[in-house]
Length: 239
Image (cartoon, rainbow, N blue to C red; front, top):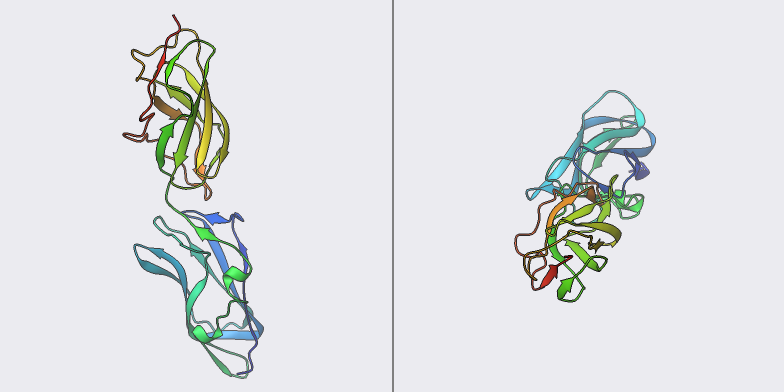
């Protein structure tokens, strides 16, 4: 057939590498001449929800255009395991001479599919805190001493609009220092009046502030049931 086909993504709202629930990704099919849709076009994406692949449709129309447009709105539970792409295609278009092109997998190519122009992944799941630990030695700590506190998540995370802080079981506060990948680092500087009953009582009690994954899904601030200074024996005594 004499259509020259070219697929690309014209833009996607928010211009993020990761997209979350309710984000809209605008998809354009671009042709070298004006066409109209004879039979509904269905794009099957490699994004899934509950094991079912996501699809978007462009309805049949009598209007001719070089660009056919649809929008994929990300829903809760959508996910990609690799960069977003079109995995299957169906439908028919015709030009003004009524020359027909049947759209199918044969017209897809690595060079002109979505991933060739935009590296987009879908993530609608909030990050989960796996462990809270420290590299500081076991023992008793007094006022002015510092204790490192390390949070490890199940995916890469970042700080949101408000820097996170950790309320410690001693009555003190750990302050955010840095983060990389799945790890966030805090420093707890022991203040006068901070105390624990025994040398095994120091833990994180509450997490405040904003922690997000790369798509912008917010951490729900649930503490790990067991891995909260597990295996450490640290006490606070400022008297």
